[in-house]
Image (cartoon, rainbow, N blue to C red):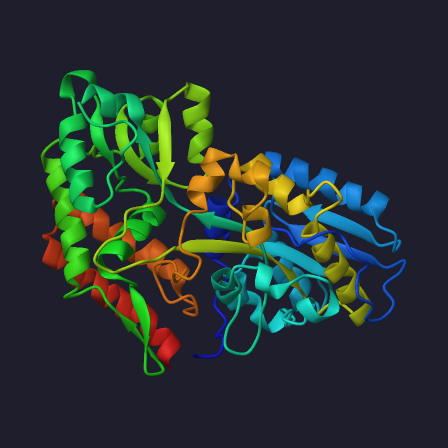
Length: 433
């Protein structure tokens, strides 16, 4: 694969906002391996967790500062504009010890991130406990840039009461896209403003997670060169035709905010991130969660991975101290609980380690169990090859125009895919030079 080529941070901040709207553990706690002297070290920790999850992170960092026996102090700074903060610091040859961000930040700040693959040698963390596909997402062929912290996937949600009203089994969601379309037609009730399907024309992430199951990745590696795959993609054509048919038949609303409609009990089946459950729970919707149906493109588990990164501003002592914090985060206490487990249970994001997934409290959580049912060996690439630096451009400049032109009848499906190909080719060209 190509080595990282830097891009601007524009677009990655949107990825972080989408992902951080609102996770794994090793075995019993052991004495950390010694690889230097980090006792008494103070490290800085920057992230953009500004919501309720940020409040929880503050409490957990405070707990570490009080309880760790190495005298390490973690000074955390939570910013709503992490991009600008990092850009300014790195330009002045400064920066934090550690960041918490989308692993896509390796494209923008790869020159300022240290290889953290030795974390498994310098701590008691077991690499085999971490789901390899998530580690792969944080790495290229040469380095690992992040240690997983949170997995952001998208899932299928269905309204059980609407299924029952339509004569469908409320405990059996669609397993294929043909079933999705057929079930949607049965659920739709124009008199009640109920739609069977909830796919938004204004939700690029949702569209991307769906369309790649029909036609695979939009950008792939072709013998060392990046290649866009829109025009002539039979899977993408099939998806767009299905979407257009459901809109024309009145089974899918031509609306931007389908999440709110789902919370209002107006959508039979939809797709979204773990945060969708908040609205559904608050509204008292009787719903189920399952993995997104696979399609012609085969088995996949498209996700985004948020992770801990160590910057080049960190000294060896600071890096070691950061490793100890990451080790603590992923290490279970005598009761079998780790900060990673607590984070997953509290915030509803699935775990990235087998040990947390095997925890009894975790397994008893039906939402997390459903989200963790993906094949751990399935590829985790999200809409493009995970090593392609231009993902944000594909999500902001290509997919929205494609789906909008079909939704509002501005272009035929073939014309929309041709235009998407032309736009994607221009993006790809920048990284093939």
